[in-house]
Amino acid sequence: MVLATALYASKTEASWKWMNHDAPVSSPVDQDVIIHTPPDTDIWRPSLSKDNFTAPYLYTQIRTSDFQSVSVTVQANWRTLFDQGGIAITFPQDNAPISWIKAGIEYTDGAPYLGVVATEKLSDWSLSPVSNPSDPNIATFEIARDGTDAWVYVVEGNSRRPLRQITWAFNENPAEFMHVGIYAAKPTREAESGHEFDKLAVTFKSFAITTK
Image 1 (cartoon, rainbow, N blue to C red):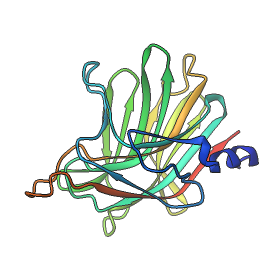
Image 2: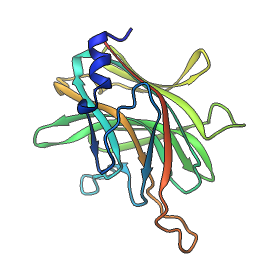
Image 3: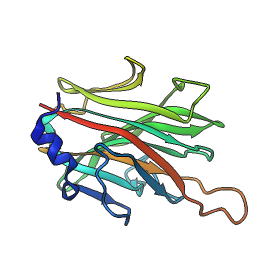
C-alpha cells in the first residue's frame, strides 16, 4: 500500500529531477513519460576508470529505510545494439562512487532481452528471455526490498518471475537516502549514414513507488 504522503511527494514536480537531460521535469506517477535519449549514453562501470553514468535519468529521492518497491512498464522500438530502458535505483555516497541497480529491456544479439545490472563496486550483467515473444518490445519490471536484499522481477500478468537477487543492496549501513526513477540509454550509434545521432524514444507507463 502506498502511503498518501509518499504518493503525494512522488507526484509533486519539484520532487523530481533530471540527470543528464535538459527536458522539462515531469513526474512519471499517474502519467506516461517518454525519454528521448541520444546515442553514446549508458549506465555501466566495467572498471573504476570507466565509470559511465551518462544516460538520461529521471528520479526522486526517498529515505532508504522507507523504500519497499518500484515498478514500471517500459516500451520502445529497440533495434540497435544495447538500446535499453527501465528502472534505476542509486545509492549516493559522499566521497565514493555510487552503487546502483538497473532493470529493463536491453537489445543484444539481434533481439530484446530482460536485462539487470547490479553495481556495488563494478558492474555485472545478466539477461533473461522476454515474457512475450510475440510482443518483445514491452515488459513490466519491479525492484522490491526483502530484508537487506533487493529482488528484481518481471511482472507477467498476475505473477512475478524473479530475475535477480542482490544481497548487498540494503546491507552493511546503506546510504540514508536513495534515488529511485527511470532511465533510457543508447550506447551504440545507428549504422545508417545520416542517422548516426538519431535518438531512441522510450515510453514509461504505470510507474509506482511503495514505501512503508
